Length: 114
Length: 110
Image (cartoon, rainbow over all chains, first blue to last red; front, side, top):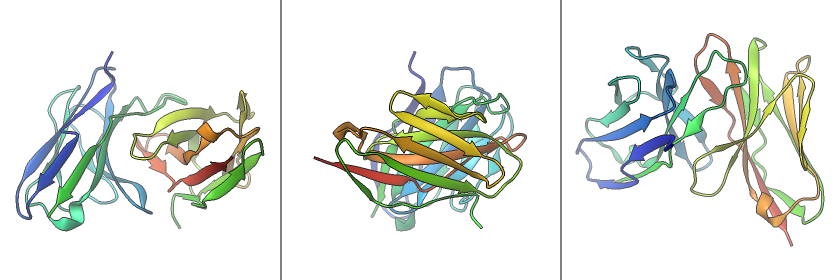
């Protein structure tokens, strides 16, 4: 049981390049999330998907797009990377709506934009 | 006002001592509460859910105070391995997302 799998684990991009971060979960969760974490800022929600076929903006969506490809997969795309997008990105999944259900996180993607 | 607020610390704790910290939340409709632990450069992992009646898991005790809108975490007999950042997490039913605090950094000193 892999839980939440993110790829890649590390990435270096040049300013203006594009890339897609992949996330897949095998727990049959309805909800999936993308967060970024910067020093001193905590986890900030970029986008989330409450269920297959729906996506919503979080706290910091600018510069990102997402696709909920199916129930398992939720990808995050940077169309034109900027140095301000240097961060650690975490994907998570959960079945929110059930009392006290927890969120499970992937191992993170460490992205550097130069 | 932020949805979830925590004093980031660091909280420097002598080994064997007790440390406690609170987290306040702004939405009175919040209904699920959690403490997550995050080690340096790792993903957050659930430490414990917080129930209305309070709950204990070994050396860790969590409390919820709905009237004052805060949750607390107490760690007794601190171990070096307890050094981590503890994230307060809140969910509002129907909101379909979790709100995270910035975390309380705990450093246990030998």
